[in-house]
Amino acid sequence: MPEPMDTGERPRRRAVVVLPNGLTLANLFFGIFAIVSAARGDFDAAARYIVFGAVADTLDGRIARATNSGSRFGSELDSLVDAISFGLAPSLIMYFAVLNATGWDWIFCFLFTAAAVIRLARFNVEQAGRAKTHFTGLPSPAAGMTLATYWWFSQTSLYTDTMIGGLPWHQMLRWVMLGLGMLMISQVQYAAVPTVGFRSWRGILGTMLVVGTLIGVIFLPKQFFFPALMAYVLYGIGRTVLLGLLDRLPSPDDDDEVALVADGVAVSGDLPLRRRRRRRSETSAVPRRDLDSKDPS
Image (cartoon, rainbow, N blue to C red; front, side):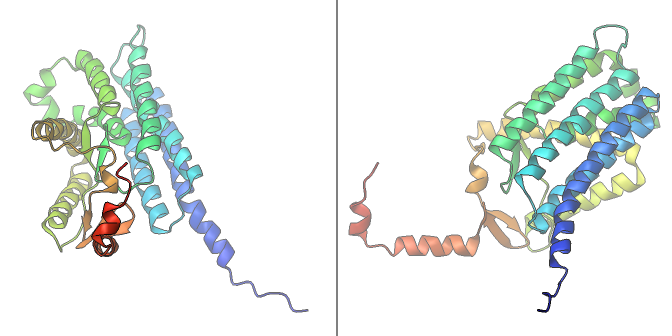
Protein backbone atom coordinates (compact mmCIF):
# COMPACT_ATOMS: atom_id res chain seq x y z
CA MET A 1 0.00 0.00 0.00
CA PRO A 2 1.66 3.31 -1.08
CA GLU A 3 2.57 5.74 1.66
CA PRO A 4 0.83 9.13 1.66
CA MET A 5 2.85 11.88 0.01
CA ASP A 6 4.53 14.25 2.42
CA THR A 7 3.71 17.75 1.22
CA GLY A 8 5.89 19.46 3.82
CA GLU A 9 2.90 21.40 5.14
CA ARG A 10 3.34 20.27 8.74
CA PRO A 11 7.03 21.30 9.05
CA ARG A 12 6.21 24.61 7.39
CA ARG A 13 3.35 25.22 9.82
CA ARG A 14 5.60 24.31 12.75
CA ALA A 15 8.20 26.81 11.55
CA VAL A 16 5.54 29.52 11.32
CA VAL A 17 4.47 28.86 14.91
CA VAL A 18 8.03 28.66 16.27
CA LEU A 19 9.25 31.89 14.64
CA PRO A 20 7.27 34.37 16.84
CA ASN A 21 8.22 32.49 20.01
CA GLY A 22 11.84 32.43 18.84
CA LEU A 23 11.78 36.22 18.55
CA THR A 24 10.25 36.42 22.03
CA LEU A 25 13.15 34.38 23.39
CA ALA A 26 15.54 36.66 21.48
CA ASN A 27 13.97 39.52 23.43
CA LEU A 28 14.72 37.61 26.64
CA PHE A 29 18.31 37.02 25.48
CA PHE A 30 18.84 40.74 24.94
CA GLY A 31 17.26 41.57 28.29
CA ILE A 32 19.59 39.20 30.16
CA PHE A 33 22.56 40.42 28.13
CA ALA A 34 21.66 44.02 29.05
CA ILE A 35 21.75 43.13 32.76
CA VAL A 36 25.12 41.38 32.36
CA SER A 37 26.55 44.35 30.42
CA ALA A 38 25.34 46.81 33.05
CA ALA A 39 26.91 44.71 35.81
CA ARG A 40 30.19 44.86 33.88
CA GLY A 41 29.91 48.65 33.59
CA ASP A 42 29.21 48.68 29.83
CA PHE A 43 26.08 50.84 29.98
CA ASP A 44 26.29 51.82 26.32
CA ALA A 45 25.92 48.20 25.24
CA ALA A 46 23.23 47.59 27.87
CA ALA A 47 21.02 50.33 26.40
CA ARG A 48 21.63 48.95 22.90
CA TYR A 49 20.44 45.49 23.94
CA ILE A 50 17.23 46.90 25.41
CA VAL A 51 16.53 48.56 22.03
CA PHE A 52 17.30 45.28 20.23
CA GLY A 53 14.88 43.53 22.59
CA ALA A 54 12.18 46.07 21.75
CA VAL A 55 12.69 45.38 18.03
CA ALA A 56 12.29 41.64 18.63
CA ASP A 57 9.21 42.30 20.80
CA THR A 58 7.63 44.33 17.99
CA LEU A 59 8.38 41.71 15.34
CA ASP A 60 7.11 38.69 17.26
CA GLY A 61 3.60 40.11 17.65
CA ARG A 62 3.40 41.35 14.06
CA ILE A 63 4.59 38.04 12.64
CA ALA A 64 2.18 36.09 14.85
CA ARG A 65 -0.74 38.22 13.59
CA ALA A 66 0.41 38.12 9.96
CA THR A 67 0.75 34.32 9.97
CA ASN A 68 -2.30 33.73 12.20
CA SER A 69 -0.06 31.75 14.55
CA GLY A 70 -0.84 33.61 17.78
CA SER A 71 -1.65 31.52 20.85
CA ARG A 72 -2.33 31.87 24.55
CA PHE A 73 1.07 30.32 25.21
CA GLY A 74 2.79 32.95 23.06
CA SER A 75 0.91 35.75 24.80
CA GLU A 76 1.88 34.53 28.27
CA LEU A 77 5.49 33.95 27.21
CA ASP A 78 5.68 37.45 25.77
CA SER A 79 4.45 39.01 29.02
CA LEU A 80 6.92 37.06 31.16
CA VAL A 81 9.79 38.08 28.89
CA ASP A 82 8.69 41.73 28.78
CA ALA A 83 8.73 41.85 32.59
CA ILE A 84 12.44 41.03 32.46
CA SER A 85 13.51 42.96 29.37
CA PHE A 86 11.50 46.14 30.01
CA GLY A 87 11.01 45.97 33.77
CA LEU A 88 13.95 44.40 35.58
CA ALA A 89 16.73 45.06 33.04
CA PRO A 90 16.24 48.86 32.59
CA SER A 91 15.89 49.38 36.34
CA LEU A 92 19.14 47.49 36.98
CA ILE A 93 20.90 49.56 34.31
CA MET A 94 19.94 52.69 36.25
CA TYR A 95 20.92 51.02 39.52
CA PHE A 96 24.45 50.24 38.32
CA ALA A 97 24.88 53.46 36.29
CA VAL A 98 23.26 56.21 38.35
CA LEU A 99 21.72 55.16 41.65
CA ASN A 100 23.52 54.64 44.93
CA ALA A 101 24.47 50.97 45.06
CA THR A 102 25.34 51.08 48.78
CA GLY A 103 22.04 52.45 50.06
CA TRP A 104 18.35 51.73 49.64
CA ASP A 105 18.07 52.91 46.05
CA TRP A 106 17.47 49.32 44.96
CA ILE A 107 13.89 49.84 46.17
CA PHE A 108 13.27 52.00 43.09
CA CYS A 109 14.26 49.00 40.95
CA PHE A 110 11.66 46.94 42.78
CA LEU A 111 8.92 49.55 42.37
CA PHE A 112 9.60 50.04 38.65
CA THR A 113 9.71 46.28 38.01
CA ALA A 114 6.56 45.69 40.07
CA ALA A 115 4.71 48.35 38.05
CA ALA A 116 5.82 46.69 34.79
CA VAL A 117 4.59 43.28 36.01
CA ILE A 118 1.22 44.71 37.09
CA ARG A 119 0.87 46.59 33.80
CA LEU A 120 1.55 43.42 31.76
CA ALA A 121 -0.90 41.36 33.83
CA ARG A 122 -3.61 44.00 33.35
CA PHE A 123 -2.89 44.16 29.63
CA ASN A 124 -3.37 40.40 29.30
CA VAL A 125 -6.74 40.66 31.02
CA GLU A 126 -8.07 43.80 29.31
CA GLN A 127 -6.45 44.30 25.90
CA ALA A 128 -4.45 41.29 24.70
CA GLY A 129 -5.63 39.80 21.39
CA ARG A 130 -7.72 42.81 20.35
CA ALA A 131 -7.19 45.38 17.65
CA LYS A 132 -5.98 48.43 19.51
CA THR A 133 -6.37 52.13 18.84
CA HIS A 134 -4.79 52.94 22.20
CA PHE A 135 -3.13 51.44 25.25
CA THR A 136 -4.38 51.94 28.80
CA GLY A 137 -1.26 52.86 30.71
CA LEU A 138 2.23 53.48 29.36
CA PRO A 139 3.38 50.39 27.43
CA SER A 140 6.21 48.61 29.24
CA PRO A 141 8.58 48.64 26.20
CA ALA A 142 8.25 52.44 26.00
CA ALA A 143 8.87 52.81 29.74
CA GLY A 144 11.83 50.43 29.68
CA MET A 145 13.48 52.07 26.68
CA THR A 146 12.96 55.54 28.16
CA LEU A 147 14.87 54.47 31.25
CA ALA A 148 17.59 52.51 29.45
CA THR A 149 18.36 55.10 26.76
CA TYR A 150 18.90 57.88 29.32
CA TRP A 151 22.53 56.75 29.55
CA TRP A 152 22.93 57.09 25.79
CA PHE A 153 21.54 60.60 25.85
CA SER A 154 23.70 61.60 28.83
CA GLN A 155 26.84 60.93 26.77
CA THR A 156 25.94 63.30 23.92
CA SER A 157 26.82 66.97 23.43
CA LEU A 158 23.10 67.74 23.35
CA TYR A 159 23.11 66.77 27.01
CA THR A 160 26.54 67.84 28.28
CA ASP A 161 26.76 71.20 26.47
CA THR A 162 23.30 72.46 27.42
CA MET A 163 21.48 73.37 30.59
CA ILE A 164 19.98 69.86 30.69
CA GLY A 165 23.32 68.45 31.80
CA GLY A 166 23.35 70.75 34.85
CA LEU A 167 20.19 69.23 36.30
CA PRO A 168 20.57 66.94 39.35
CA TRP A 169 19.84 63.74 37.41
CA HIS A 170 21.17 61.48 40.15
CA GLN A 171 18.26 62.68 42.28
CA MET A 172 15.80 63.16 39.42
CA LEU A 173 16.19 59.59 38.09
CA ARG A 174 14.51 58.26 41.22
CA TRP A 175 11.42 60.36 40.46
CA VAL A 176 11.61 59.51 36.75
CA MET A 177 11.51 55.80 37.64
CA LEU A 178 8.58 56.33 39.99
CA GLY A 179 6.76 58.45 37.41
CA LEU A 180 7.22 55.91 34.62
CA GLY A 181 6.08 53.13 36.97
CA MET A 182 2.94 55.04 37.95
CA LEU A 183 2.14 55.77 34.31
CA MET A 184 2.37 52.06 33.45
CA ILE A 185 -0.38 51.21 35.94
CA SER A 186 -2.40 54.39 35.37
CA GLN A 187 -5.49 55.01 33.22
CA VAL A 188 -3.57 57.39 30.94
CA GLN A 189 -4.31 56.61 27.29
CA TYR A 190 -1.41 56.13 24.87
CA ALA A 191 -1.84 55.87 21.11
CA ALA A 192 -0.95 52.58 19.46
CA VAL A 193 1.51 52.28 16.57
CA PRO A 194 0.25 54.66 13.85
CA THR A 195 -1.36 53.38 10.68
CA VAL A 196 0.94 53.37 7.63
CA GLY A 197 -0.51 54.11 4.20
CA PHE A 198 -1.39 56.76 1.65
CA ARG A 199 -5.15 56.40 1.24
CA SER A 200 -6.14 58.52 4.24
CA TRP A 201 -4.77 61.53 6.08
CA ARG A 202 -4.24 59.36 9.15
CA GLY A 203 -2.20 56.88 7.15
CA ILE A 204 -0.12 59.68 5.60
CA LEU A 205 0.63 61.21 9.01
CA GLY A 206 1.43 57.77 10.39
CA THR A 207 3.80 57.11 7.49
CA MET A 208 5.58 60.41 8.04
CA LEU A 209 5.96 59.66 11.74
CA VAL A 210 7.35 56.18 11.09
CA VAL A 211 9.78 57.44 8.43
CA GLY A 212 10.95 60.26 10.73
CA THR A 213 11.47 57.76 13.53
CA LEU A 214 13.52 55.46 11.30
CA ILE A 215 15.71 58.38 10.19
CA GLY A 216 16.34 59.35 13.82
CA VAL A 217 17.06 55.75 14.85
CA ILE A 218 19.52 55.18 12.00
CA PHE A 219 21.44 58.45 12.00
CA LEU A 220 21.14 59.87 15.53
CA PRO A 221 20.17 57.02 17.87
CA LYS A 222 21.79 58.35 21.04
CA GLN A 223 20.40 61.86 20.59
CA PHE A 224 17.02 60.64 19.38
CA PHE A 225 15.70 57.87 21.60
CA PHE A 226 15.44 59.45 25.05
CA PRO A 227 13.94 62.81 23.94
CA ALA A 228 11.53 61.07 21.54
CA LEU A 229 10.37 58.61 24.20
CA MET A 230 9.98 61.37 26.79
CA ALA A 231 7.87 63.26 24.22
CA TYR A 232 5.69 60.13 23.83
CA VAL A 233 5.31 59.90 27.62
CA LEU A 234 4.28 63.54 27.92
CA TYR A 235 2.06 63.29 24.82
CA GLY A 236 -0.03 60.57 26.46
CA ILE A 237 -0.53 62.68 29.58
CA GLY A 238 -1.50 65.78 27.59
CA ARG A 239 -3.80 63.79 25.27
CA THR A 240 -5.59 62.15 28.17
CA VAL A 241 -6.11 65.47 29.96
CA LEU A 242 -7.43 67.12 26.79
CA LEU A 243 -9.80 64.27 25.90
CA GLY A 244 -10.95 64.13 29.50
CA LEU A 245 -11.84 67.82 29.46
CA LEU A 246 -13.73 67.28 26.20
CA ASP A 247 -15.45 64.16 27.61
CA ARG A 248 -14.12 62.10 24.72
CA LEU A 249 -11.79 59.79 26.61
CA PRO A 250 -11.98 56.27 25.12
CA SER A 251 -13.00 53.41 27.37
CA PRO A 252 -11.09 50.10 27.54
CA ASP A 253 -13.78 48.45 25.35
CA ASP A 254 -13.70 51.06 22.59
CA ASP A 255 -11.29 48.97 20.52
CA ASP A 256 -14.17 46.57 19.87
CA GLU A 257 -16.43 49.40 18.70
CA VAL A 258 -14.30 52.07 17.04
CA ALA A 259 -13.30 51.48 13.41
CA LEU A 260 -9.59 51.45 12.61
CA VAL A 261 -8.72 53.01 9.26
CA ALA A 262 -5.79 51.28 7.61
CA ASP A 263 -5.06 52.12 3.98
CA GLY A 264 -8.71 52.89 3.39
CA VAL A 265 -10.01 49.67 4.97
CA ALA A 266 -11.76 50.09 8.32
CA VAL A 267 -11.87 47.39 10.97
CA SER A 268 -13.85 47.33 14.20
CA GLY A 269 -12.58 44.59 16.46
CA ASP A 270 -12.38 41.66 14.04
CA LEU A 271 -15.21 42.81 11.74
CA PRO A 272 -14.45 44.59 8.44
CA LEU A 273 -16.47 47.71 7.80
CA ARG A 274 -18.34 46.06 4.93
CA ARG A 275 -19.56 43.30 7.25
CA ARG A 276 -20.58 45.83 9.88
CA ARG A 277 -22.58 47.77 7.29
CA ARG A 278 -24.21 44.55 6.13
CA ARG A 279 -25.11 43.71 9.73
CA ARG A 280 -26.63 47.18 10.19
CA SER A 281 -28.66 46.82 6.99
CA GLU A 282 -29.91 43.40 8.07
CA THR A 283 -30.90 44.81 11.45
CA SER A 284 -32.70 47.75 9.87
CA ALA A 285 -34.65 45.34 7.66
CA VAL A 286 -36.29 43.70 10.69
CA PRO A 287 -39.98 44.75 10.91
CA ARG A 288 -40.64 47.41 13.51
CA ARG A 289 -43.19 45.31 15.33
CA ASP A 290 -40.56 42.58 15.85
CA LEU A 291 -38.17 45.07 17.36
CA ASP A 292 -40.86 46.53 19.58
CA SER A 293 -41.88 43.11 20.80
CA LYS A 294 -38.39 42.33 22.16
CA ASP A 295 -37.81 42.34 25.91
CA PRO A 296 -36.32 45.79 26.69
CA SER A 297 -34.17 44.29 29.42
